Image (tube, rainbow, N blue to C red):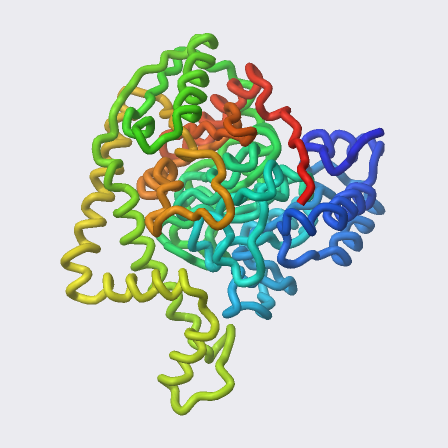
Length: 481
């Protein structure tokens, strides 16, 4: 019997086009799966069941499935605005906020007749790597319910077949880290490739939106739908968008891959090092050249990212003042007291901590002592990548230094778990995480980094690796909660 919730986008599209299944049947199968399993995973903050079923019925009646995403439900991270559907950022501050507009990426998906299935959990305002700072609950990793799913539950939803695919945001690695922890595919596009309009900002100079999918082909399909310039986002680029799905048909030749030694140091688990080296061997068997290289300034990336992200987050959080929207304190003496109490009641500990630090960094003293230096180091990190790409077509690293850690065992405030991902955000480059092995019964992610706006290239390399391995086909061994 065909299990509809386990379908990929391209397989679902094929069956819908042939009228072998209906969008309504697909949507009902996913909602049934959510009803059965989400009590354990806790992936969804808000479900959009009624509207999704209504839209699926309308699409079935029209019978037009020419678009790759037509009639296929998507889960959306709960910091991406969805018109008339609650968007909370997993914060008490926005617990009841219902946006009056769609983010550009949501508008584009709806134009392709995609269905919004629901909103997934995250760390409050995307500040964290485990969902443990969410105002609502901590989500679980479907491979092991005692482990974290990463910085959002979008990958957990895809891995557990609670969604066919999802949209997520990535400031320091959330898309890739979550995908690695949950054994699926996650792509962070080049900064500016995908519009940020309608994304509740964390750090504006690093925030991106990207897809999480069950395989690389699906990733190409979603990226086709959401890429492109947007007049509502001044940081978006008018660089020509290729057909990513068509590019997968290209045969790669004379590919040179660099392996930065800084990403295979003592902080990286031995099993993960071995998985990356085995991945390099796979590439060599395919005819690629793999060599060790160096990015000397990435050792500072965690500190640089934390300083810049905190400063930019402080600026972003200023808009939540209890006046225009968001949580508002009931009892206050004056305007300043309203600000203080609304933010004190509405924000959690991690957001307060980063906002206070960021405010200091934006002050004259903190700016001169730390922030200016952080931006200078960011430039050096970017230059390291540029120099590496003069010799290599792509770089490969672990996505994370360990497999998913246990709930309650969060690392220190610098999020060491992001050590392999944050340099990419600082440089504004594209990167994809794909499964490449297992340790402790949990997935390991391989990160493939490309030149700016070479999403087609990293998808081609990822697709080639996927066709020569079977890691993406491994089934989750469910454990009872």
